[in-house]
Length: 257
Image (cartoon, rainbow, N blue to C red; front, top):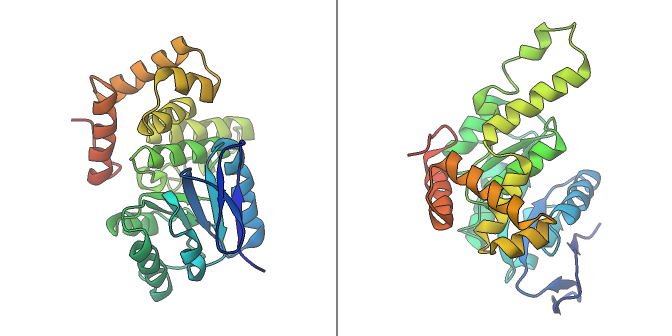
């Protein structure tokens, strides 16, 4: 099955690649590399709704990466596919990605919440670790955090691996789900809406533009920005982005300076 290009188009100018496939000119782009057609398509459909106006390029392997050359790639999500971080196969995939997109953050998609693998991934420069056990809204918040210059490694804070839910059989599933949600949000430090605002801020959007894109009032956007600045101990918008980049370089356990 051929790899496909998926773009959410809003009537803007488009260009075609050599295969005649349409994509939006100069639009920010996310690449999803996943062998499973079902998993890959599911991720793309989800991101189509969350990243309106972005180009989404889905590939079954890194062998097709050249199709994305020339795109404004902001993030690449690579399927771990049960491999260890030290595996030759994964190393080859990462080398292929960095050779073509050396400045683009890479995240891993995993079927497990292995903290050891997550820690190893962080050490080699991976910027996010997304397991299939993540609630959708938390995964999207983590995605926004990475796009804004941060890192997302919930496993390293024990939100998944501490087994706290296993010892409370009397609690119903709704309570467990709420606890998990709270743990992940505590890790990311920002609510999903704050993460959305952060991503738009990273793109240089004004408050008015952010309000229009996220369907929020100007007052609500200003409130979110105030919360974000307080959490990051930043004085202005530029400092917010600088703090996120600084913390990304320091790792997920870094505290605001």
